[in-house]
Image (tube, rainbow, N blue to C red; front, side):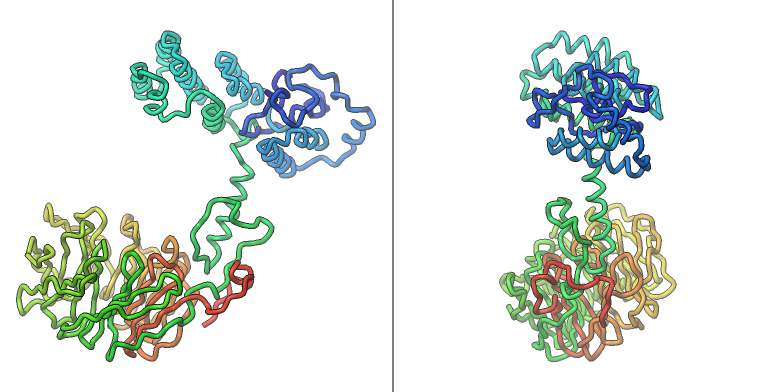
Length: 603
């Protein structure tokens, strides 16, 4: 097995790096590659000198070559690091002759000789020799206590391999005579002892969640062992690949308009160009104007699967629109009528089977519609004095909560039967968290509180200085987006209960405006505004990255399609619903995201 230094002791001579050339060693206290270095017998590239051989001084390097190398400018630490990273990557590709030449010409070594020897012994399953190597590595480690942890990992692999080979007595000896005396991680030792009862190798591999004896499990073991060694001794696994992936991710994070699914594979991007997304790929352009409502449109909401859009209007109707999966054009599917006070809020059930419609402050009723059939399943009203203006579904889809500013706060089943109630809470907006127990409610005291209907407890979560007109919660339940009267849009962390960010630009008085999270990974925020615009921000930035014009009156609600990140809808008092998408005509270069600097913002 080619080991980049196994079989040779570190040399004190300045030319030791040259003697190590074919071993991939360097004069710096270098690290190692993590892929395992193959011996000549396994090396398809046919490296001429095996690592175990005792090469003569300079390994055949002539005096003139030595002199020319000595005259070369000394490499900086950064340059040595780059060479080692390249060498590690090339070794992973099996280009061992190329690595040997690189190390010889640069005067570097890929990893410390002791690390190379240790790697060889681990990959060959020579556990006693690997344990002895730890004594040599001890002096090179920042934390000598890590030796116990490394020894534990080695013995664990040794124990499992004995068991797989059916050598139960030898495995028992490792467990009792070597692992247990370490007095480390006794819980894990108890688990390991249970594997003695496995009837066959497949059973062992399944219970231990282990690949079995061989290159795969030993390589994984080396990756774990490396975490205890300084990078100057042994490089972290696939270090160059990790750095490149981090660079790509950082460019994506800084790209204001990046709105496509993240792919961690480097094969999906070009490393030769910086990552740039064009604004023309972003939902900033009107694709369709829906004019079927004949009065102010107060609310819009895409279904959870993104295939439908529901819009509610002052004209007393709810319209369900079908989203074409190819063209992303919307067509009218059905109209739900009879909401005497108009429709100011809509909520889809988790499976999109049902839709609940609520009216404005004076409305004491709510309607539960079967979207598939267009039939009204329930029309609920507890009292004519109630005000039911907001609703939220429990994640189980069998219950919902409803409330309003006159002090009503109910939990009901699908038939409208009252299951629980909370007295004296003047509700402005509601949301059910994914735990199925906690209901968030904004109230007239400028706060959001969490209510538990099971144990009847409540707690304060958010406190603002001005009325909270509406709020929505991110998919993971961590963040809340608030529209605050006279203040605009605020982002809160519900777990830490802190205000994260105030977004600038939007005009917000005392009208109820509904904002939303959107885009892939919910990286974006959109809100309507009383200045007739739709504002879009990147979640991490306070200034808008886009201001969308076209509506002629207040924009009451914005909804981002959860399945199609390039599709968004906005509802306005001008009686229209606008569908926003990418620019209608993109050339191939723009489609690749290379045509326009993503920091540009058009309005």
